[in-house]
Image (cartoon, rainbow, N blue to C red; front, side, top):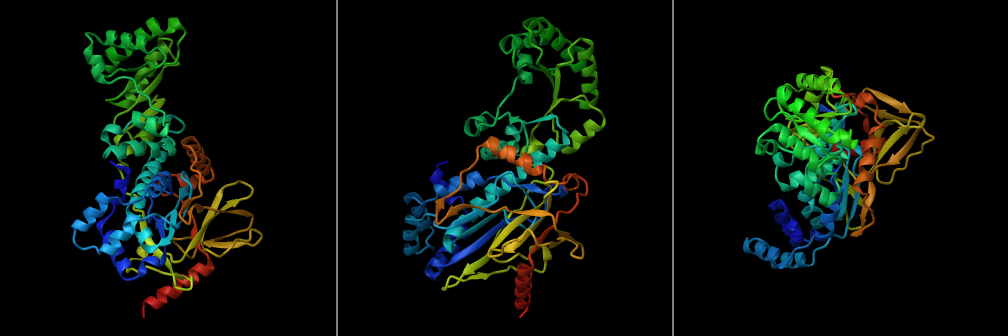
Length: 480
């Protein structure tokens, strides 16, 4: 797809609204939008922000060419003055975002746009698409990696992904979330996500015997030998033939790093039996890799049964986040500027409490315990507030507001950092290894109670008193 065509990857109502803004004279008004999500996938304790790099690339190349303009003209509903405006369109506003790899919690902004209303409106669809997808996959990948309890996890989902972008960008997000690499070659080429793979069942079937297939492979790739042992019978032929070839071909070369892969059957039983056979044959260094419709729940179950698995290859249930396949980030107007440049907070009110938005242009602070370095709570503040670390702060539970805790020995960190200022990129995107390492370090700041799979402890995300008062005033005003 031509990069310029991503400008047309947009819900059609963004264009109808923008045309209306232009013809009503609103196009010079500055608006503020927050991107946030309302509930954690899989009833987890947190999500992981990802996708910012793709948002940056999109904004840098955002424009409308003659083909785009002609298409819009053909719809017969857009004014020529609006279409003329689009010909010279470029982003001129500000964007603030949390760095990729940051743990994020419900109802706090992971990205804020401050821009003329048409610019902010036309970017909504792509921003949500990029952040929703990659944050979802990074979050799912991290759940799977944590379930593996230190064992290596590879992303194997390319052929089951939902489209090309789902596979390629999904592998990037999975790597941020903690996977060791991917089966997707293109993700390695584009993003330097380590790609690896050995053989499919078809390789084994192409030879007259399983032994010949294994022997040929080990001769070709002695330093990358992983043999798929379940094409015919795992324990009667697959593992014995693998043992024979390892001893005949690899050990004489001094090579002791190799593996077998199980891709079907009772992985717990087969891994235990295979481990026994390998150890009895004097091959304790041989790793056992398992794949086949794995996810965090099955991995935890396998480890509870003491399965002898060293590496997990996880495909469709990771790359599609199968158990809870939507993160649900939304893009909501939170403020506008009047003709005097004053920021006027806006709120969306709903009969559903979960859909009432937090108004205003905001800062997001995370408080860390000075002694342990652990994250204590987050607080949303009005943009002009500052935090005095020498003064105690009382933070309330977002779900049960009668619960609170007072922070005294803490440091405060602003999570939203400038990405664009007046249309200029002011942020240097880290490379993928830096993002992955940052994500791991930030996850280490979360208490284990926040990270558990079942009934995780609620992390406190509160509003400052000033922001709380503004929100209440707007709610009261909305009733009249």
